[in-house]
Image 1 (cartoon, rainbow, N blue to C red):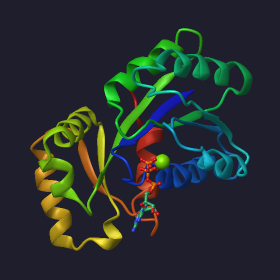
Image 2: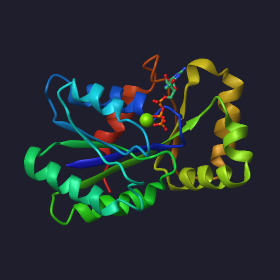
Image 3: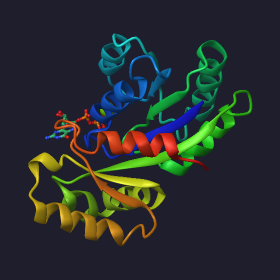
Image 4: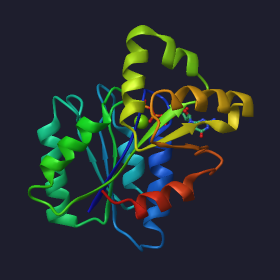
Length: 204
Ligand SMILES: Nc1nc2c(ncn2[C@@H]2O[C@H](COP(=O)(O)OP(=O)(O)OP(=O)(O)O)[C@@H](O)[C@H]2O)c(=O)[nH]1
Ligand SMILES: [Mg+2]
């Protein structure tokens, strides 16, 4: 059971990407995919939509899976493994989650389940780089997420020009010299298959 998280600040396109990735990963029932979403103070409408696609969807509320509800996240993973044995679990943490803490929490679930880690994919919303990086507190959170990423996907590239994309890319590189930086438009299906391939190939 490989666990891949789609992280990134509020509204950067996590759910939209999660849905696309899960459909491609699932293929024609080639792989079993389960989804774990973590919403704070929201009605988990997304979960219902996703469930219609026949995938197992678990919604963990009551706090962020990287801290307050880490142990219920771990339990959820163990339960998913026991009952469904999915090949892949895609996780959407809250927009304020810190990727390495989500990984640690997932590994706690691995005590009871046979898990492996997929990449921490962190989305960066190309429509508002200055807002995300230059604000005091928000900037610290976003840069922490970027530092923690295995793959950084610059999202919503369908509505940003090439110059804007390369400016975001240059700024992101300052915070993470190792992660692969890719461009993405979930709405236009750009970069989706490449991310699926990276999830499949990922080993750690
Ligand atoms: N133009 C464009 N808009 C996108 C894309 N992906 C997502 N969006 C839009 O961005 C908004 C937020 O998308 P979500 O997928 O809900 O983002 P999220 O990160 O899950 O949001 P939270 O869970 O609230 O943090 C929605 O209006 C989406 O339609 C994209 O590739 N291109
Ligand atoms: Mg979402």
